[in-house]
Length: 412
Image (cartoon, rainbow, N blue to C red; front, side, top):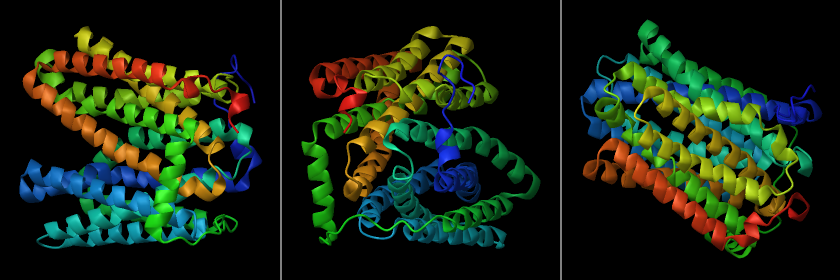
């Protein structure tokens, strides 16, 4: 592959592993379909209720279900055939999307159906996401885990950029029902691609009760110095994603702009993340992976600080793009270091802790940022929040010497 200074995305896992190619395509199609619901579900909920409380209620319901599904998925991924686990979970989600579509065609669509499907989709998403992460890391050599992580991250970021725009077009042309049916079709394609994988039996031989198995995974994560450090860094990176809730007020009161600017700012982190993934070739060859991880995490609050002090659209876009760049690189390096240091029989449960971080960390960060936004001007709140996260990063650098001293050779 042609390289520009060793930066270009390393796609060798796609060439070397047939099963990883199917995983990559399945995840990309799945996220493009799921991304349609990010627009369709809130739009329909608000249309039915004219209540932002219900819009938030559906999102919270799905978040709680995703939390539970992630923990349960980690247990299943370590004791049940991973391929079938993913297929079953995505099939449940696809049926839910069909139900949403049929509900939308009723003369009076029912709100309780949306809440019910939110539960099913959250649990299914947690189970399938955890099992897929555990499976994907077994399909490539150890030295290619960073490259695999970059490709996995790229599917997420492309879905975040492309899907909302597609959803808007579909809803405008055919309504939310068509959007749900398209998401169901994408899920069916995902299940078909997963079916083409070779069998992936769970590696674990232990048949502990579920809560005991979960405790075993948590005990491993707490005692392993590198895994513990990576998970703590992950909490910080998710907290740093919270201030996105301040963007509407920032656009209105600081930039004095409209919804077009707000859309640009919401898309800026994803654009930065895609740039990070496409220029991530160096992540598979960097020697001091721990230090590179902490530096990447530091980019996230620095982006928020730039957003807070900027006061202009261009600086705001640059700050948010830098925030997204840091998140992308941190996710890639976290994936590689975490999988390199976790035995295969525990990968499902440790991956579930990663998934749980995404749900809880972002939720807590959003609440804290929202409280700051009530007490301070939006730009000041962003500056304070970014500065606080940057200070926490420096604290982690001081406390986690076992992590920032990790080199590629020590990732065993």
